[in-house]
Length: 120
Length: 107
Image (cartoon, rainbow over all chains, first blue to last red; front, top):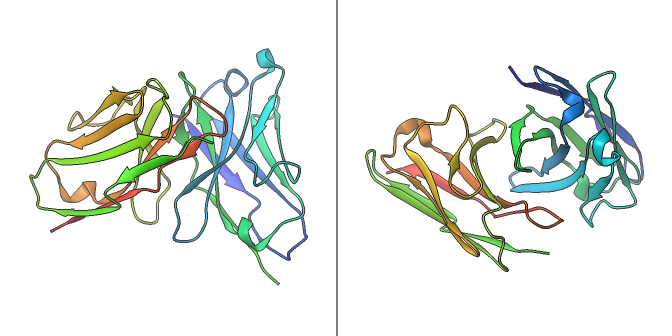
């Protein structure tokens, strides 16, 4: 069974940093692209970014709203995905979901999410 | 960026009704379209990919159609467990973009 478990969400001040983690199990993590998707309170879904697999050089894509501030990385030996968030803004407040990218390249499995609150 | 427009934003229907949700892309995306269901307080769940292919384990009462710019998600017979918000997403061109969601309620 595919499982994705996010952690690391917290209350952080504007301008601060936070690192989210996603522990994956139940599938060959190294084969898959992975995405982060977020959802502000009471709002819709917002794609954050993607990291490809080793075969595709671990290249990344980002939404314009986070490019230059957020960095997606992965550790295939630990079956883990990460989201490093710097220069956080109040508008980054959201539940952050880790998703597995299936074939074709859509989010076929989602974690339960972790809440990030950016507030002074 | 490709804009995804869903309609209606909300709907109320009776148990057993056929429900249709539409999603329009601002430019052609072939069939690179997925549908997700999000129940209150839960994470989203994949329903359909490639516009019309059913995700494994999803009941056949859900179906998708369309190509290019216009897509539909249909629930053949609405049940109380289908109460949720439904989102479309295009995954053809970066940045990937979601529709604004359609909230489905029971009348």
